[in-house]
Image (cartoon, rainbow, N blue to C red; front, top):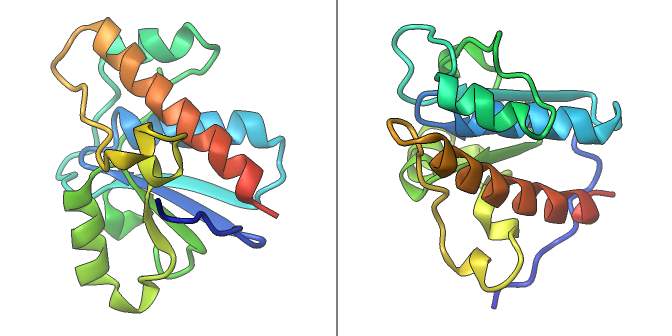
Amino acid sequence: MKKRSIIRNPGKIVFVCGGNICRSAFAEKLLKAEADGSFPVIESCGIDVEVRSPSPCEAVCAAGKIGLDLGHHLSRGIERCDLEGADLILAMEYRQYRKLIESFPHKGRQIKLLREFAPFPENLLCNIDDPFGNNERAFEKCFAQIQRSISAIKMLIR
């Protein structure tokens, strides 16, 4: 099992998924809500965003059940996000991780899979699958996976 390292003073954390309407948007809102301003910048973006889009109603409802509002979220692509200035970039899937490594090879140490931080044995799986197009229960399950990973990350940040 890979040893997790302590993440020292990240000034900027960016969550990345495909469309930035479900997973990375939720992760951004969750960490902002739980961090109480302890991180200067928390953002999210998507590698496949062509048109800015709102979160689907299933995502809005699932997030709302735990007190997070995705109702006003609009997706943004990686070109609208300063990944160069990020101290920690967290991808939801291995495909996104590979694309980020290829696009930003000099940021390799800062690019991670979010699920890498989940508790064992969940961290043995690399992807947090996209719930888009599924029912609200699929979003709740996905968001619970993200919550577990973020809880672990918060314990590693110093």
